[in-house]
Length: 114
Length: 113
Image (cartoon, rainbow over all chains, first blue to last red; front, side, top):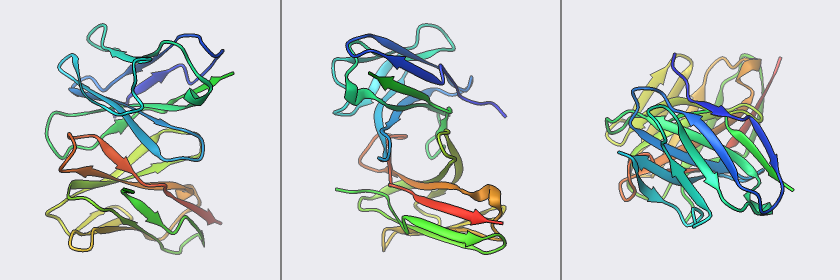
C-alpha cells in the first residue's frame, strides 16, 4: 500500500538554524498537510497545501515557517530560525481529492532544537 | 474550545478482552476519524465515519457516532498485545477546510498477554 515518507526521521539542530523537513506524499493525492506534536501534547494542525499554494494555516505557522512543493513529488516544511519551542514531532500527511477522505500520515520527523 | 476529547486517558486490559474508548467534540462535523499511534511512530488511520453514519465496522474495530450527543466510541474486540498503542479521535469540522483535523489528547491502551 502506498505510504507517505518523511526524512529525516530525527533532526537535531541548534537554536537559530534553519531546518528543512522533507516529505513525499502519496502520488495520486492532491492535498498536503503538516501537523506537529509536542511531546506529551495533542497533534496540532500547522498548514494545508493544495494546487501549489497554502489553503489554510494555523496561528503556529508564522513567518518563520514556509512550505514548498519544489517538484512533482516532494513537499517540504522549512523553519527559518528554529527556537527551542519548535522541538516536536512533525508529521506530513496527504489525502485524495474527494471530500470525506482520510489523511494518510508519515512516520514523522523528530526535531530537537538545542 | 477543546475538540475531540477522549476518555479514558488510559486503559489497561488483558488479551482477549474488549477495549472501549470514547470521544466527545463540540462543533458540527463532516466526519470523525480514529487513528492509532505506536510509541514514537506515525499516525495510522483506522476508520472514518461520516456525519450521516451511525456505526461502522472494520475487522475487529467498531465505531459509533452520535451527532446529537457529539460523541463517538471506538471498540476493539478480542484485543491483542499488538493493539497496545495510543488511540486518537480527530474531527473534520464543517467550519474548517477539509483535512484540517482537530485531535484529542488520546487514550493510551495497554494490552497485556
